[in-house]
Amino acid sequence: MDPGAVCRYLTERLGAGPVLVTSLHQTFPGQSQETWLVDATVDGEPRGFVLRGNPPGGGIVPFPLRREWEVYRRLTGSPVPVATPLWFDEGACGLFGGRPFFVRDLVPGSTHVPGLQDDPALRRAVAHEHARALAAVHTLDWEALGLGEVLDPPTGPADAARHEVETWWRIFDEVRPGPMPVVTEALYWLHDQLPRAAPCVALLKGNNGLGEEIWRDGRIVALSDWELASLGDPAQDWAFSQGMLALADAEETLRFYESVAGFTLVRENLAFYRVWTVVKALCCVTAGLRGFLDGRDPRVALPAMGFGGVKVMESLLATMVTMDLAAAAELVAALEGSRLSEPAAGGEGRG
Image (cartoon, rainbow, N blue to C red):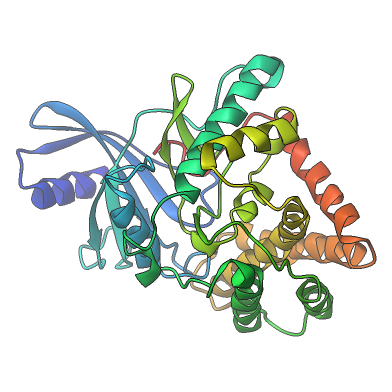
């Protein structure tokens, strides 16, 4: 992206004095969306922006970009900390090759918590801070904020798992390039074991945990990456918390979360949703492959994930469908825990 074009664009949109871009870089790995971090001065004062749009072949997450924007917009001013969304652009300016994108304020901070690997007390504190943030998300009055207009809700807590699985089963049928019998078998296997109870229908972040949120001075100052947001069982967010439950004693972390949230998670549901995340991730990388196959997006990471990564996940699913659900979940949790052997390298870099 051309810094001069970004300068001109922000100057025009803000209607302020000339905007000077002092730093412009794309986040890494950033495969799901194309996200650019901008440090600038506006009327001589420092200010940061985030520009976020679909890659040329469309986002790996198979939902419209405007859906994520609307989540940000409705969360602004709520107890859930998010970067302030500024505007949605349909793409006529040409910055993203004519593709839609949105702009939000950049929140100073980092997705990496220094010293996390070697300090048990810090690991426990980070796990508890994440628990506080998720409790704020899960106890939010999403209906009052109009999130039911953006995110399709289940009919009630008992319907949450069925609604989630059937929603993504339809997505799988839309994005798969051909027959994938192992995945189909896994979908039937999981559908036969749907959880029938949940404490509530909650707003779910969908993609959370190590490397996803913006930290500053030991606190989460912004929750980022809302592209997988949905409404459902809060156990699902803990099942895909990317190492958070492995930071300290998992049960103690969950009890702390429950004390803040004011309700009790159904522990058996965690096992179901841990296995379910494998299917959901497979659907996303398969969706991302479409842009490569039709020539819109030549990034080599897309076939690496859409072919190679999918085969790994198919192999994992083939193993798990022969197992008890709890044992299969332990296998997924063990793989997730291995993330802790490396520093967190997150979704967007900064908020």
